[in-house]
Length: 165
Image (cartoon, rainbow, N blue to C red; front, side):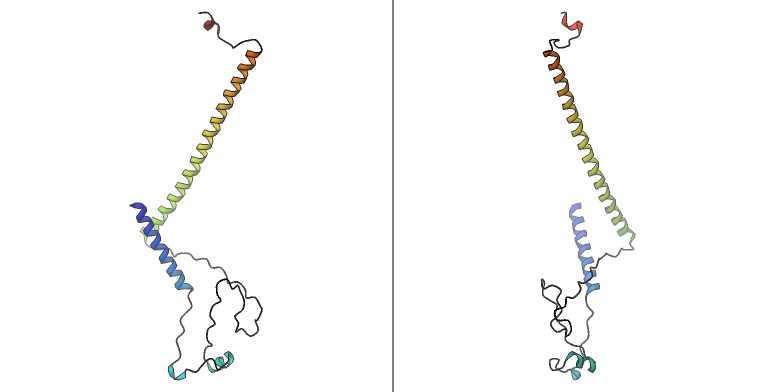
């Protein structure tokens, strides 16, 4: 239940942040001129429209994958590459609400704890693995020593009190 609640809160927060980011980056709406002043734009050049105080029709954005090629209506920019748009980093605004701040701080602390715990667990597993390898190496060395003593004719080393029964 707690995981579901966390997932829903995270999803709603992400949706809210995305909406805020889109609202900040969207172009402002330009009001249309009154009906009495409307003239057909196709008959006038953009320079004439600017002299009359009217806006030129907007050029549609290029299709995805079209690259950074100048719009076809750009008079002096035919064949010239446009610069790539600047990359924007979006940061969600922090809430002044102390409960939200506590929740965010708790989430960050939990993430740090989980990360430290995973690191500690990995180190522990590595130590156990190394100890196991060392133990096996010690056993093998003891076996090799026993075999060398046996082949040399000395026989296994048995304490004196055990051989006389």
